[in-house]
Image 1 (tube, rainbow, N blue to C red):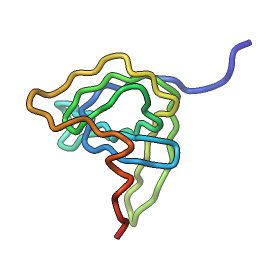
Image 2: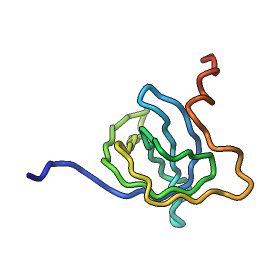
Image 3: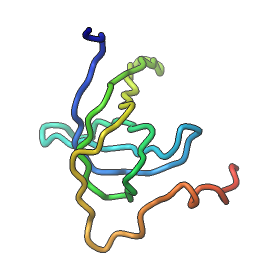
Image 4: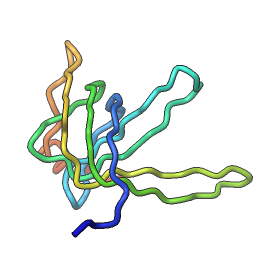
Length: 109
């Protein structure tokens, strides 16, 4: 039986990594040479692979989006859930990969 859903692949550069209740997440920037600013996709629930800022990732999973109106502009917050990392390129000279323990000592401001 087929399930309804929107699935896709996302390839981009990790802008930031963080910790949420569901585990680690990464925000990927997808820069198209035709656009001045990159599109961004938040990849939720990364596990099994440690990622750092500036790494390049190709990920597949379930896509979702939420519309947000700010003044006279409309934005879409795009998320990728249940990710499967297909490719992972580390940037040479990167700092150590982020782990859940990196975020345990942080104090919210």
